[in-house]
Image 1 (cartoon, one colour):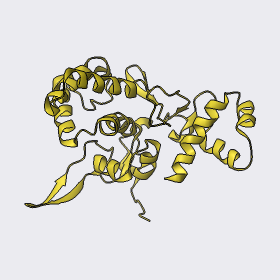
Image 2 (tube, rainbow, N blue to C red):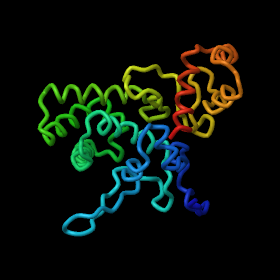
Image 3 (cartoon, helix red, strand yellow):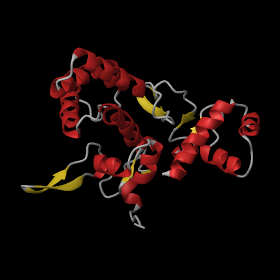
Length: 240
């Protein structure tokens, strides 16, 4: 086990809970249903061997503190959007990097994947740029845009800033219900049931202790479907 050591000075400039390093890479990968190695590459980079020698893949996401391999809530949300491109379309990270730099330059923004201007105007620009890079037809670009928008619909904003994420609990349904949410101001940023803000971990523990889905739904005044989504989130973590 790697023990992280850092001082309060490392976090001194992080006043917004959404920017605080709070999610270890394995935990964040589980929340997003991503391979740990994939998320590690996106956040801290990796070395790889080529015929010309050893090269480095530089991270796509900027962590709050390079000395601490922990994601902030903003990073978690960025990775959520980024996963749409990798999971649904298998687009190479080098091409994604070029498209992101292009959009970032055009809009002058630090975090294009979660900036409000990206959601309103930037997606079209990003998809067109990426479509040219991967030689995608208009139909292919439309499919890419639809997937991007499905992922962006699971993000909520206040004053144009991301405040909540509704992670997918089923990977094959882009229109699945928003039953589970992650808000850095609620339950220390751990997943909770959206309707009652009960941590999904508590629901899972009660279920494993013998409470039925119907019993839990009555206790928390929600639907059995909501309880099932909470269990999917947590049991997926344990199975990973």
